[in-house]
Length: 456
Length: 157
Image (cartoon, rainbow over all chains, first blue to last red; front, side, top):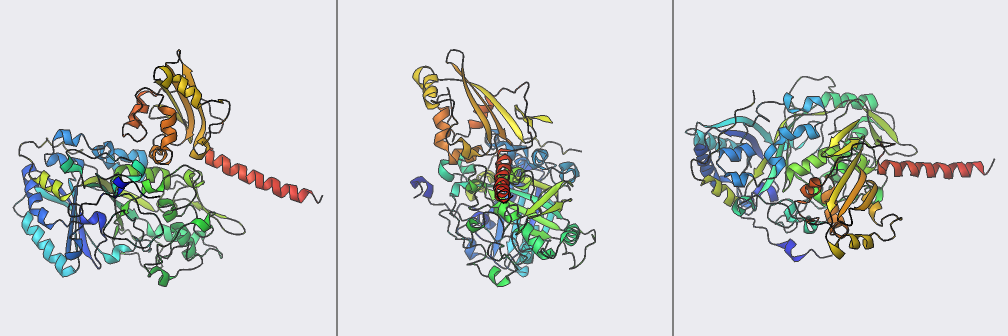
């Protein structure tokens, strides 16, 4: 069936930030930065200086440096975005991730009361990423950024975390960031997959969503259109606990590496269980024509890839689900990066080091979509017929959980006692178009709303 | 444990939603709904595909001016409403177009519209609060398979 004509309106790629539509250049070296604007005028001045460096989806190929920027709700307030515009943003974004967290965080340790500063305090105004093709270039740009900030004392750096391409491996030792939704009409075709492309409006504001769905666009049009929403979360990975779990639960028919692969849905190399059910096949993982080129049609029972495996939960593809679901509405663009030193191989005792993932996700409905995924597809299993069973790797486990692994002659149920991931903080942010960034940077002085005092 | 789910009650995995909404006047309201639901005693075709509905009840009240719609379903009521809106938009609008002011299933205001007319139950009983429609279907599959097995095994006795 051909999509309706309105669905194929050309994407205004010169106005859309590159990170939304393009794959990062490889190799890359970069950092995430969280900023606070103590003063609206200085914030807007910072934005004016930043603007020439923001990469659009049309220029992304030609440049050696990518800069992308997004603002939290308090950030938009600090920059003086008028109240009528602020009111036009969706409730989840206005309330912020910390205020929403009790509705989707099910374990005590992941609640905002235990988050790291500055997350959830209202102090984070901007998320910015700087990404370069070489370390040399990165250092050069970082020096330039510091110089540009030197006379803007009210623009404070709250956190700066470096990353590089090898951080595409998760702390648990698995290749990440393989699957990337294909956006209808996009300039770039992501890695080969038999899945249908998804309407641009699911990822960029101002375009039709899937099957007539209208995604509300913040006003005025220049502010909302060609923008999107982004969420970022700092996660701690309990690698030692994960390895101990594998040791405690491995069996001759399910050795540790295979058990881990059953939990994720892919082997450490990234080879999917659907195509490589018995052992890792790094050569398959290295082939972009194969590594994401699969559906679940022949595996309705999950004998290859369990229905409860992480990647099958997060993107069930063509899996027949017992609950009426449109899988195209729940996709996110992921840009995760790992932090911290890897736990040396074979170590099963916690070394106390900080390590985990910065999980970054993009969608025109990022806050709502993330909360849906967390509540329905990570911390519940009803949608795949697994009752209250949770995602084995990303779910919160409280000692009662089970992970079902379909096998012949009999399925195995592994007790899930502990969570392997803890939330250390996070924010929702709005990622404006290039013209919206210009519009914000030119807002008149004196409209800045008073900043609420940070919670003590 | 029963806890509020927006306005409705929730018991285990199951929630109740009760709304009392104004019906359009004349032919487009109660009369139209009666026609759409003709054969009332039977199950509504298509409702089974939703996969989370335990029951649905349409009651026309107050001299054809109001509709009481009550349902028991799995999970949170607004989680999958966008999915219904893209999967079965016509079915949703088909039944609810008899409601005065129905904004249409694609409207971003549809959640607020429903919430506005929602009335929480004062009392509610659920026999199996932790069994969802999906888990019941899967348990029945196991029962049927066991019966096949037992039947086969017992024929030799």
